[in-house]
Length: 118
Image 1 (cartoon, rainbow, N blue to C red):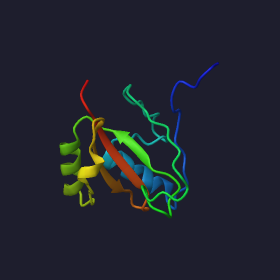
Image 2 (cartoon, rainbow, N blue to C red):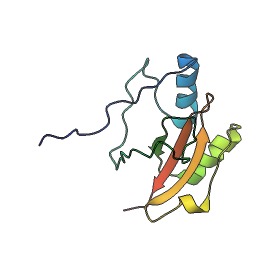
Image 3 (cartoon, rainbow, N blue to C red):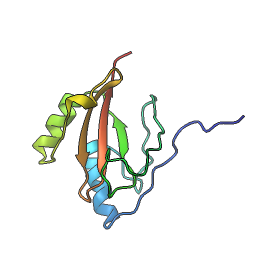
């Protein structure tokens, strides 16, 4: 059977697409598609539907995006310095790595994941 080879894009609605794209570029380093196509590093990607009544990423939201990072502590410090609230919970950390949660200016949940080395 033929399989997909990765995620080719993630598309969602926004009240102000240009401002939101600029926020993602400034704070997370995701290139604005109007300027260039973002090239990500190779690595693990999880594709996982959740039950419709999950509280994992908020009851009012339909999605949560998870970005891999190579230095979660520095990323969290940079985000906090920019005035962005960063949430951590001990139970989020596991044998696969460390996690934190932020929200973009429109309230969309973003999970940042530093995978375990190796």
